[in-house]
Length: 386
Image (cartoon, rainbow, N blue to C red; front, side, top):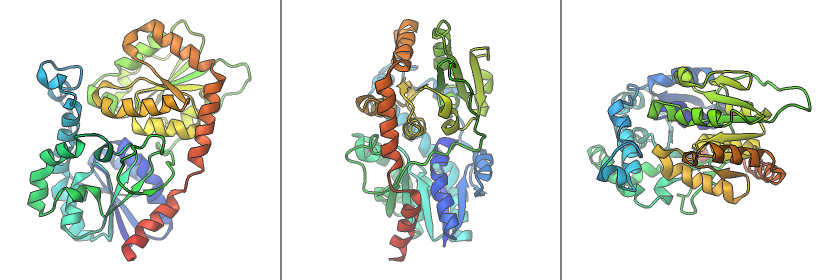
């Protein structure tokens, strides 16, 4: 069977799909990945077949100025402002991909399209062309759980749906697969085949420190998207500065496109560029991050206590996940705007909290006991054959 995985943009949308793609390839299927040009390196290094479509989306300074907390006036004050910004951007990504993706569907004729849930071009063109589609959820299902999300999707994508001769149900896919940890998923998420979240954050080498008397180690990351969207790593620098007097080692993880924005390395601060997060946190006592889907899920599976400082430009997502992690005892929420003293106090409290470490480990055991992606992939295929 020919199976086309379709990715809208960014590593954060592609990496969670890799274990499923591997499993389906191992089952003998011809698997390819359609993606914007910027993802060619990550796709090829994952061992999968790359098919470039469209152009890379561009984040401009004008777009950044409209992000939550940066604009002024009625638009920035609208509680749905971030949803409009997010979905408006993915409307643009859809248009960038559509023409080339349609050519791929016609020339390669896949039997199944597995699309990341915001790869709207694949959802629409697959439904219009009669190709079975499967929606891939790697985080909370906003269309199912966030009031107003589906309405805004319809407003921003309605003309594209009409032009393709289909309707909003195309965005649901003919079936779905959901690897989001249940702890993070909305109660009203759309029905899907459940599967374990298997962390994949790129290729890397395991590295462990020796010595039982080492200092505590804190990982700090803003994921791969924050700096691309905002143009800065200011929250990371604020954390490093606030912890200057605390006796611990700090490992900051940054994407390659933002290495020049990273805090300077020192005897206390190690800078890791494009380091797989799942490997990095193996030797860390806690992680401080922005609350992105992949970072939260990888940290949950890794069993490391989390300090989540929700990012402003995507707070409709990060606040939800941060609350779920805090309520289960595997982490805490931190407001960076409270200043250096609050940052220091929170980090010191988490590093000293044996109960939180036990809760994080227990949560990891729950996640690791869930059904794997192998069975989920076979179920996707069986549903088509049936």
